Image (cartoon, rainbow, N blue to C red; front, side):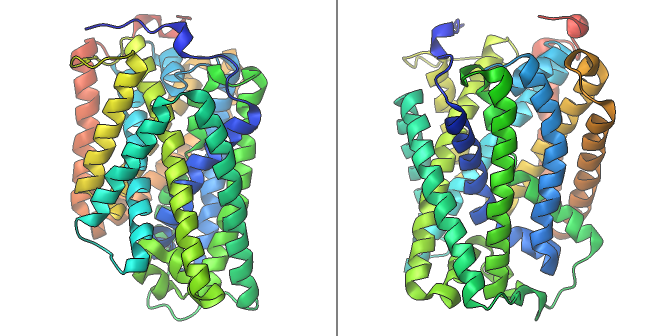
Amino acid sequence: MQHDHQEGDYKKGSITLGGAVAMGTGVMIGAGVFALTGQIAQLAGPLFPLAFVAGAVVTGFSAYSYIKMSNAWPSAGGIGMILQKCYGTGAVAAGAALLMALSMVIAESLVARTFATYVLRPFDVTGGPLVPLLAVAVITFAFLVNLAGNRSIGRFALAMAAVKIGGIALFGIAALWSSGFHFAAASQTTQAATPLGFIASVALAILAFKGFTTITNSGAEITEPHRNVGRAIVISIALCVLVYLLVAFGVGSSLTIDQIVAARDYSLAEAAQPALGRAGFYLTVGLAAVATASGLLASIFAVSRILAMLTDMKMIPHRDFGMPGNLQRHTLVYTVVIASTLAIFFDLGRIASLGAFFYLVMDMTVHWGVFQFRRKEVGAAGAIVLAALAFDAVVLSAFTAMKLQSDPAIVVIAGISIVAVFAFERLYLSRWLAPQASHDH
């Protein structure tokens, strides 16, 4: 059953510059700090704070393509629009856009499981059925808030971003202060960091910054989008670099690498104890709950947007299964169901790996499309776009090599899933590239 998407579903100018920055940082800080710090330390060893810096550099190059395209064509479909402008409405654009949507849904399940892991930590629960159960509960909460509409999401995201950026910065400073600015992670480690491990860790660090795409996906709704989309992306990434570095050095000053790896899924809560005592531990658990819940909220909002846009553009099929409400509401339901399913069946490490594979393949498709079809039109420097493509390729290769050693099954799952997405779109759309790719639609 087809639905026409009314322009009224998207309220132009309903998200301010501050709201857009809050949404971007909301998604990034939810996933990056709490879910990924331990996993990045496991791969990068004592160099793990530098992995965040490297991730920010790669993301900075990546963001260039998105900013150039969004400045030219601000759109509520963001990445779907960018891919369509480059490749037309064929299977390449649709497949890559679907990978983007899926990588965001994967990020939601990652953040939801992180929420559950931290909230259960005071009760010494580290596994069992309560983790997925609580993860599904927080996804459902985010779904209900999303039904309330844009304005409430913008306000909530702004308040939450202020709380968590302030709180996390305080944690980092206090941890460093109490350790006398001594970096414990540089000592007492049983594993030396390898160049391959470090580059592979950058793949996860990129996941910690990919929330900037949330801003791209809300382009049409941001005030003065031709100016503010790019500004919101740059401010978000800069804020997150500062927060991540504070946290990385804070955790590293309290715990050795072996301790960080042992407490991989809740390393911030563990790091708070030596520095701030039991009160600090509880404060960190509370912060993690706020950060992950608000990150989930912003992410679900963005994914439902991109899925609705792809349906509009006839790039994915749509069935409403008799559900009431508009297209956006249906895509919200799909998003929540898929995220909940992943949160039930996958652990944090595997969810993060799957997200990294999907995101990097999609990102490379975007850069190649911009370089090949649109760079002159949007005034993009070819060298920067190609550099972004090369960085992605190096990081993806290193990450794949590491995962083939430690968890080959997830490489197989990711490979089969990516091929299946493109094959499905090829069957649905019956062509790889639309002939009008070089023209406007």
